[in-house]
Image 1 (spheres, helix red, strand yellow):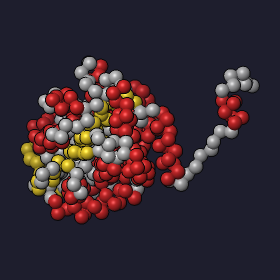
Image 2 (image 1 turned 135 degrees about the horizontal axis):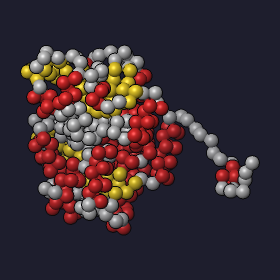
Image 3 (image 1 turned 180 degrees about the vertical axis):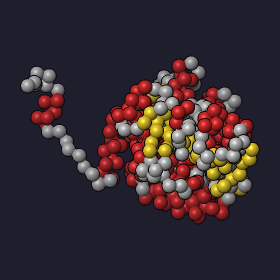
Image 4 (image 1 turned 60 degrees about the vertical axis):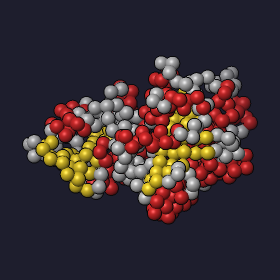
Length: 421
C-alpha cells in the first residue's frame, strides 16, 4: 500500500498505465469535455469542496478533473470494495488529487477511506449507493454542518435517500442523478447490459449461446442485461416480484417464473434487484453442477453467500474473480466477484461513451447545488427535463446524428385542440 499526505492507493508506480486509460476515456466523452472547457472559464464550483464516493474508474477520473477545472477542491473514495482500478487511483494521486481507494478492500478499509475524504469538511457530496451520505448523517454527523447539498448516482442510493427524506432524517438537498432519463435509459440499460456480460466472460470465458441465462429483476439494469444475453444466443429467463415489469418481460419475449423454478434450470444467474437474498440456500440446493452465479446490483446482499458457504465442503479460486464452491453432494457452483458488482469487479464497468451522459448530469447537478442549494428544501430532487433534453441533443450531435425540428405550423397544430378529423 502506498500512502502520501493526501492519498492512499495500492501502487503509485501504476500511474503511467492509469494515464493511458484516462486518455482513452477522455477521447470517448465529448459532452463532459465541452462542459470542462466552459467550466475552466466560468468556475461554477469556485470555493466548493466536493467529497466523492464513486467507483474509481477511468471515466470517474474524467469527471474528477472536470470538477477541479470548475474551481472545486476534491477528495475521493471508491463506492465498492472491488471496483477501484488501481492504475487510475495511482494516476489521480500523481496529479495531486486527494484519493483513498484500492481494489480488494475490507469493509473496514472501505469506511476508513470514506472517512478520510470527509476530513477536509466538504460543502458538496457526490455519492453512488449513498454510503457517504449515510455516513455523514450517522457516525460522522459532525461533517454535515458544512454540506449544502449532494448528488446520488445509482438506483439503490436513491431508494435509501428517498426513505431518509420520508422519515424526516435527510439533512440537506440531494439531486437524484440516477433518475434522469439520460442516465437510467442509457447507463443502466446499455452500460449495465454490456459491462455485465463483459465481467461474466472475463471471469469464466464460457459460451453464452445455448445457455439458460437467469436474470433476477427486469428494471432498467435487468432489461439491458437480458437484451444482451439474448443477443448472444442465450435462452433468457426473468424472475420478478412486480407484475408490471414481469408482464413487460413476457411481452419482450422472455420466459418469466419464480426463482424457485429457475434455480433448477439455469446455467448462468445474475441478480439485478437491489434486494437481499434473491438467491439463497434452497436455491443452491436445486442448481445444476457447474452453475455460474453473479450479481450486478450495487450491494453484495442479493446472493446469500453465507448460506452457500454452509453447504460447501471446499472452496477454491479457479480463476480471477471466480470461486468454485463444491457442495456436499459433489455439485460445483461458481460465484463470480464475491457476489459484488461483476461488471466492475471482474471487468472495467460501463463504457466511456455512456458514462459521458451520466457524469455530465453529475457535474451539472453539482453546479446547480453550488448556485441554488440555499434556496432548496431538504428533499430529493429530480433533474429537469430541460437538462435531459439538452444532454441528449448534445450527445446526438457528438455521435454525428441529427433530428427534425417542428415547423411553425406543426407547433401551432400540436396545441390546437379544435383540430380533429
